[in-house]
Amino acid sequence: MDAAKHQDEHKKNQSLSSMVYETLKQRIINGELLPGSVMMERTLAEDFKISRTPVREALKLLLQEGWIIWEERRKAVVSEIKESDVIELFKLRDMIEHFAIKSIIESGEPQVLAGSLVPITNEMEKLKGSPTEFMKKDMEFHSAIVDKLGITKLAPLWSKIYDDMRRLDVQSIYPKRDADLIIAEHRRLINAFWNGDVNEALECISEHCAQILKVYQLKHTAKKED
Image 1 (tube, rainbow, N blue to C red):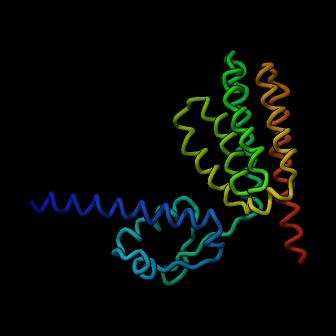
Image 2: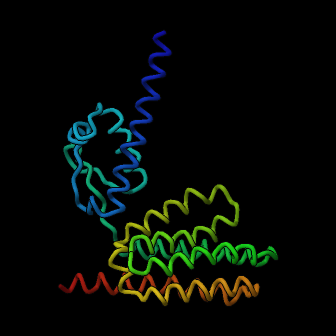
Image 3: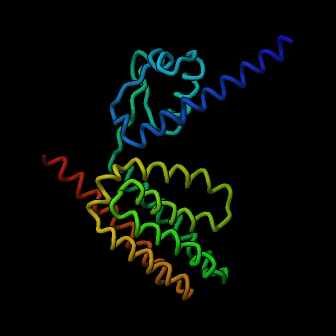
């Protein structure tokens, strides 16, 4: 009976820990918790109205994934986003999408993917006035390309890239880019898939990522000068 009770308590803590982890991660991604924001284990436990054990486990996972750092007196602090990390993120994203695009086109069935990307791009047309929703559709477009590979071990890495991209102050990046230009780039990539043109597709995705990175760098250079 004691063993069963202990197991039930463990499952309950795991469930609560997952809830706290997801809630805090989304707050960081959405900008509710900005870099430098402090989170105390005791305060979080009080806010969530739970014990400190699941909060502690949630913070450990956030630490492992780089969302927070530990400071003295057991303070959890939301981590800063360094420009070097951003550049590395875009390089990694570019590498993965290059591999995915090349593999899909060489498989001989890129038209199937092209057909699935059309409705996503059409939805983006309707969301040009909503940067947050537009960005989500943009990442859905790129995720569809990576998911088409069917490599399950790649999923956790791409999921982390997806979350990091959302965190990069996208609400101020996307309005600075012409939404019509982003959509045009997507349609150009779709056409490359229809035509099975691997070189055109690879060139398109490289230019697409480079443009977004350029906007981010210009924005943060301007912020430093203010």
